[in-house]
Length: 122
Image 1 (cartoon, rainbow, N blue to C red):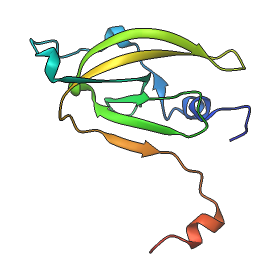
Image 2 (image 1 turned 60 degrees about the horizontal axis):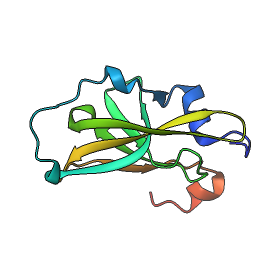
Image 3 (image 1 turned 180 degrees about the vertical axis):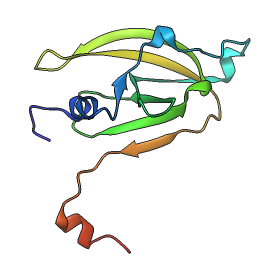
Image 4 (image 1 turned 60 degrees about the vertical axis):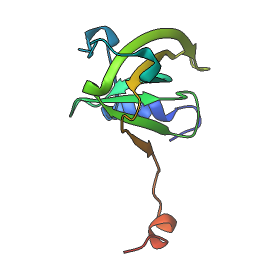
């Protein structure tokens, strides 16, 4: 990954993470006590291979961290703002609401080198 090309663009170029149309998501909008919901902000993405909802807290960061949810766990999404990088790429930031206690996977992308693999346990 070059400094000019962020990890979000690389993931998009390889098909690993693609933009998600938040208007097309089928959300579980049943009556829910808002006091029992928690929210997270980030750029929404999905993988073409499955129905996971992915939220990237800081799409402009060089630290590639994202959260992966089951799409069925998203209760509500609110469009917040757009952010842009130096190259002019724009990313929507949304506030996604989930029931308190929803489980998600926190992932951090890494680029392995020979040095890294020598230090790994078998």
